[in-house]
Every structure is written in C-alpha cells, then in structure tokens.
Length: 261
Image (cartoon, one colour):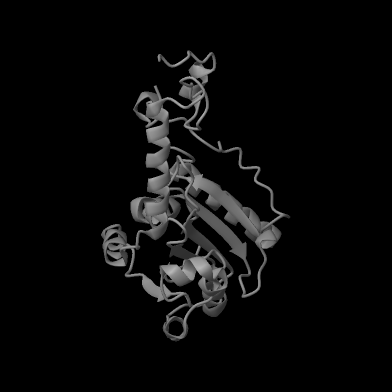
C-alpha cells in the first residue's frame, strides 16, 4: 500500500523533530519505523558509551590547554551511576585529594567537562566547545585548572568549584539523549559554587550541538551570562538571558538530516 500524502510534510524541512511522518494504513511507514528504532538504539548507545579521557585530553592539549585534572565521582561504574544519581554528584576520595593539591588561586571561573548521560556528546564536541568558550571569554577572566570528571552529574561541579575557591563554575556535560539528538551537550553556570546548591541557582545553556545551538553561539551566550553574573553577583532564576543570541540554528542542509525528505 502506498503511504498517504501528509499535508504537513513541507514543515519537516524546518525541524528534525518527528512530525508529519505519514502512515501506511493505520501504521507508520516502514522507513519511519526503522528510523525510530535506529534513533532509540543511538540514544541507548550514547548513555552507555564510556568517555575516552585519553583521547579527550590529547585533543584538549592539541588546542593549547594544559593537561586536565582527571577526576571521578563516587559512582564506581555506569550501572551504579544510573541507579544512584546522588553518587554522581560527589567526588570520590582520590579525586578530592587531587583537587587539594591542585594549583589554583581563587580563579574567576573553572571549566569542568563531565560525561553525564551522553559521553558521545562530550567526545564529539567537548574539545571544540572549550575552544569556542576560550575565544568568547573576556581575556581578563582568570581560569582555574581544567577538570574532567567521569560518571558525572551536573552538581559534581559544585564540589570542584568550592574546593578550588572559584567564583564561578561552568559544567559542560552530556545531556540526556533525545531520539534525534544523542550527542547533545549542556552548559550549567553556577556562581559561588558549593555542595548543596540547587538547580535554581544555575543558568543552563541546552541543546548545544551542530544541529541545535551551535558551539560558537553557546560559547558567546556563556560569556554573556558570566559577565552579567559578575556584575549582578548571582546566577540562576535572578539572571535572565537578554543576550539577544539565537537559541537554535537550522541544519545547513536539511536534506542530509536523517529522517528528513
């Protein structure tokens, strides 16, 4: 049976969301069903893929960054990380010792990379995004040591920032994969980080990836938020994004996006 023509089909050129999929009888067309199964498998893979810290460290150092501090949360493996989110929010004892010996003099900002729920996103975009952030930041901003945390939740950056005496911390972390975005990255900016901070004290820059909010725009947004947080002395619900920067960009060539006609 020939799939029915969907009058909304033209809208698909404007988004990667699953709209106007068409139907065959009462079911999805086989092509769309297979695309959905593939996207679901990619999302699961993104969650379980281990972060290759050696490769990430090499990419960062090729960009001129110093060797990052490699830390680990209290979640011992991926299984425990998924079952115990609280353990992903604190550093293990060995990591705390490494931070204590780190050379940091109350930096303005500490950048933390964490695998989160999509190590794929950090693996693919982490180094490039940090390069964009460095270009976007005011050169006068004093950066602390670069930190990479495995089995990391967003809040683990609070402990990193507190122990380093940082004025602010920016957590660059793999986001929960969507069915069209297994490689999405988020940036969470928190002023005066300390263990126990709530999500209301953070500003989030989400959907950072080439097909979403592009890396340079996200980096410029972070730089703008950081500047305002220093001026106002806060982050979170009291700091609104009036940067004027766009939230998303369309794919350069929608015809090449999986699932699009």
